[in-house]
Amino acid sequence: MAGEPILIVDDTPVNLKLTRILLVNEGYAVMTAASAEEALELLRSYRPRLILADIQLPGMDGLEMTRRVKQNEATRDIAVVALTAFAMKGDEQKAMDAGCDGYITKPIDTRTLGERIRQLLRGHGESATAAVDAAPEQEVIPMAEMQALRHRFLQEGQERTRQMLLDLDDEFHANEAARTVHQWVGTAGLLGYMSLARQTREVDALLRERPVDVAQVRESLTNLLLGFSTPREAQDAPIPDAIVRALRGKCAAIVGLPAHETQLLCVALERVRARAVAFELTSTPDYAALAQCDLVVTYIRPGGSASAWLDPSGEAAGRPTVFVGHRDDLLELDLAVQAMAAEFLMNSWQPDEALMRLSLTVLHGGPRGSRAAPRKGVGARARVLVADDDPTVLALVRTALENFGMECQVALDGRQALDAARRWRPQAAILDVNMPGMDGYEVLAAMRAENLPVRVMLLTARQRESDVIRGFTLGADDYVVKPFSPMELVARLKRLIQK
Image (cartoon, rainbow, N blue to C red; front, side, top):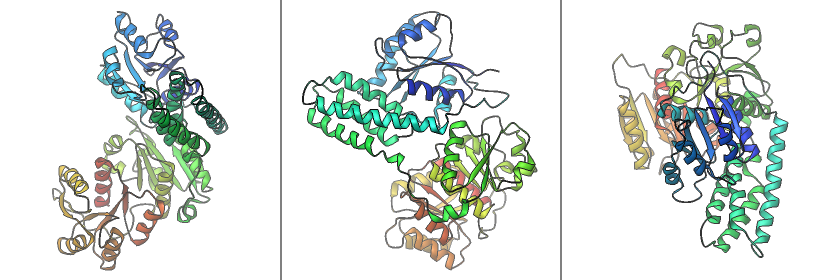
């Protein structure tokens, strides 16, 4: 069955191209239009299930186009989703008033766009089938072309921003400048420059205020020029030696990942002098090729559990494995299939996170360590100790765990946590790294020194690999970075207790 037809309407060629590839790789049949007028002309002979339209279009804007689509009896059943940077208060309500069925804010989260579209189609009463019997044929932008797109974007951004700053002292056209900056919000996000996307959205909002605050616009444009000159995401942070040593020279089998995620992972592996071999999730494993791989990275997608790559008794099951996918899809797997994975990457994973999880998989292969507490009998409640000096975090974590039938005790500092671990003997402990008195590292070290049979998960807001590596050196079993998803925390904790 072919994928659902979708029409994308955007006046920025780069945005059109990258968004089209994202949705094609999700299995949708995609057409594009560079203006509202072109889109309406297409609709004379083309019936998409959904129109994804930028609000800020030249000539007829996206909202007027939506009104005409909804007023036409032949097209009113088409779902229309607005793309907006929320440059002004009330944009969301204007979109709904015009007849839009949903909205997506820029910058687009490229990892979750396909799932967002599926949810919107389901809410509109459609089948929301992207691809049924086979994974979609993937389109990949060559790395050289992607680098050229990024270079051109940064170069043009610097030139146009400098000109805007000069125009502030002469003839400044706020509406024209706002139209340009609005385009940058989407392009920056699609090219991976999320900090630039946030900066451009802030400038867009300032340019649309009346009267224009020239001093504030000047300051924001100056900061934006600096952002274009030294984009944060373009500067690769050094990779910790422990990760490089673990992955250098290794070969990863990448099974069924969407093309843009495969590209991200391959580039990350190149940084540590590792390589990758791609396999189709729907194909029978090539065991001769698989034998040359040190680990397997497998994509979990809806309806893909019948794949031979996910057979617990198959050849692939004997190799160190990382599962990648949406947390709901991962949690719906049969427990025997879940047990195949030593690690998993959920939702919008980042390259540094991927390298960390892959290095742990190579080092440990399967369940980490031998300190697991005896498994509870069927029907017994797992005991979990949660230590954090933030009462809000404590309440959030405790609620999530108790909703999944776990028994919790909480501690507001490290000494309380260590005393509770000695007295209560939990199966697992969640320790915040930054606590007054004894921090999470010190509590972890004391637990290991006393051979307490407890799995330990670190909760950290630092997002620095060195902190995580220090934790694993002291004997941690896993970690979660704040802000975290309660579902991810629960899923990782359940895996720890089951090991």
